[in-house]
Image (cartoon, rainbow, N blue to C red; front, side):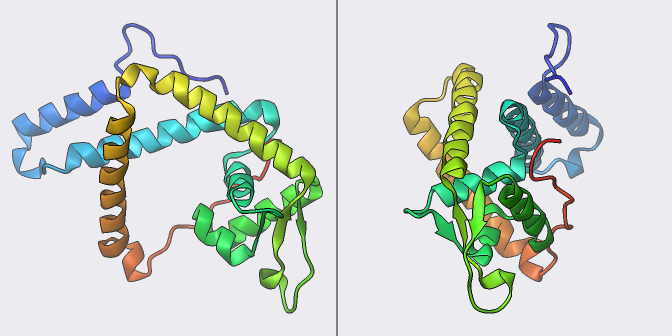
Length: 196
């Protein structure tokens, strides 16, 4: 799938949100809560960022979940090792989805499973040398693209720090008071580890 490039006549995502908010303000004002435009923009931004990341990863033969796993492992001190339960928390992936990703990464020689007692959940996952190189190349590709893509936002380094704190507050509030806090987890995604 080719990247979508808006034409000069195609409304950008934020313009669509603004139009929706304007229509609601006029025709359904009681439904337009102060947080709604923020939530809608956050959801759209998340989808756009994930799509952009997936496109950046295609030349490396990686999918989004595999990228998350490799980066999480690379972020640990040598030998870049984590338990599956730690990876589950780090990448916010279902246990079934994580198992599929790890099997595919192991088959490609990017991770190895160290022997441990009990079942596979107790076997540490470790980056191989090839996995480390892949993680570093993938993060470089994604980071360079993000820098280019976000350059037009006009946000300073201090501004990004402020935005990060605000997003963190929103995330924490949703996790404490949303559906997940009540035990309703996400559906088990059928994510492929690598691009076929």
